[in-house]
Image 1 (cartoon, rainbow, N blue to C red):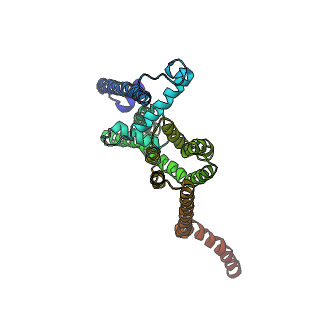
Image 2: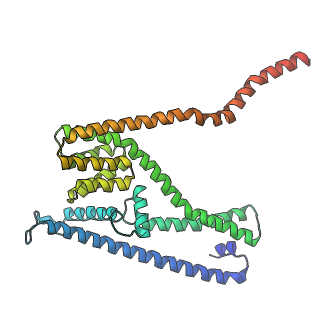
Image 3: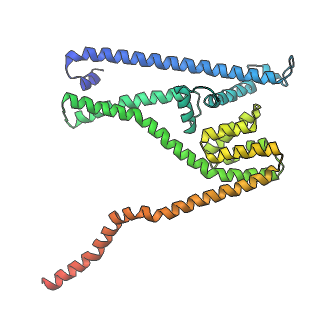
Length: 335
């Protein structure tokens, strides 16, 4: 502790105030994360209780449970059902319409799009962000002490504050980068999902059974898309409408193709048309879109190669070609 105080405040007279500030800061952060954790636990239990009451309300009044484990809290199947309902509540918490989103709900939605489905993901994200924001100034002070760099006090505080700001924003930039990577994974895997949907529809499987089957198979190639499809199958098992489940999937993966698929399935159910033909046409359209994106990148490649070729390749080729000529001219004329 004294080493850390000496880093930030070499003057012993300021050590007491620094320690008091640190105690107040860490007390505030402890209370903040304690309240956040208790609130998240209470919200989780409330969501589970609400969903279970909705499932019971579907049945007739006074009807008994279909299975004994549905009323046995110690049953493993009951615990598995509770975990699945908690996961659905955690996912759907940021997808409720006509409600003002809080900062925690927005953060939870962003973490879901980044592939973090845990119930405490927002809590640990805040912990990591605070830890990185505190670690960067300490590391910067250690580097300045190791290389004997002694700037002025104002300059040092500005550098440490900048490092703390960078550390605070760095986890957010990582989340954005991970969202883009997973979104690209879903965009690449969505045509394969549509092909499998066509195969299942032609084999006689219903839409809900096909999604449940495809979610297990496609997770081996596209894990994030498979996880979202599994969540979609859980929503369908819980009694949700197909269009609503597809809409929630579109919000999680943030793809226009999924939104269009939801509209297609809804219109197919309303009009009673053959879902196999509709899925086949839409699958071919997805294939064409993926091919057009690949062609667009291929056409843009020569333009992107101009700068690396001009900086790294052409000077090297010029040296390789010109140096032997220069040595021959030198040996011929200046012997």
